[in-house]
Image (cartoon, rainbow, N blue to C red; front, side, top):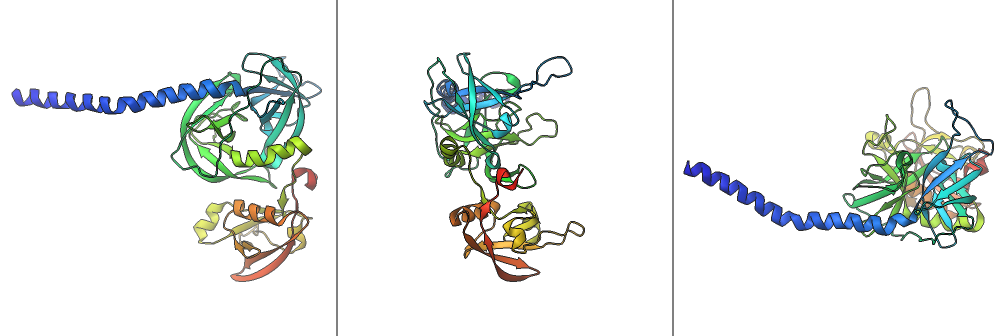
Length: 348
């Protein structure tokens, strides 16, 4: 009986010591989340878009596209996802205090799923969101998401960075590269809202989820803030952003890994583009036979689409790049002109 009592006492003592050690960390994490929401939420807005000719649903209600956005600057520029406002001609933004403000489209970059709206005569004071960096992020880092899932205002979720340098196909011709993967709960309506670090700075713009049901399945994606920071000022100043490229669609990187290949596997070549004119070949759709594998640009090795995009961006639109291409096990050089492959330039 004495031994049994002693064992129980030891277990309770260990439990109390564990709580005593862990409690400060739990409290710190709790207060951190509260502070992050308190500071960042006034900069997160609700975005609405509809077509010029309103569409009515089966139950007699007007169809509105809704999502989230962030206040970028004191001039009233709001950044959101391009897919949130796609097809819309009338735009509105609801601020944290409830004020609904008309907005106009300043610019959009479908290849990056980014768009900028400008508020028209808001009465409320605007608080731009603090901007961080995404180049030094680590897998396992704590993150927080704020948005308007399913039309519910100001929802905070938290999680971790699950992976970096993911890619999101946006169409058969463009893809968003280098995206952040997170397990923070992201649902429809969160698109365009910020992904924040533990200091409350935006490190990404939430853009998509991977889910068969359409609800959060713990796999969400965000556009890195370094990309946002590069594209948004150009949208504000010119309204559009050219996309340097050559006109290829790359295969899933997992395929190259499975086959032990180094480089960017060309899945398809878009007709009429520099890649097509230079004779690059994609995979045979009938047999699945590998065509060309791009391994370097101007002597700089590339193994991912993001690396290829960065190299082509460095070359510049209108200039010629020398690609190192492997076909049938043999390496050769191919001269390709870098062009604007944005949907607008390709005629989409």
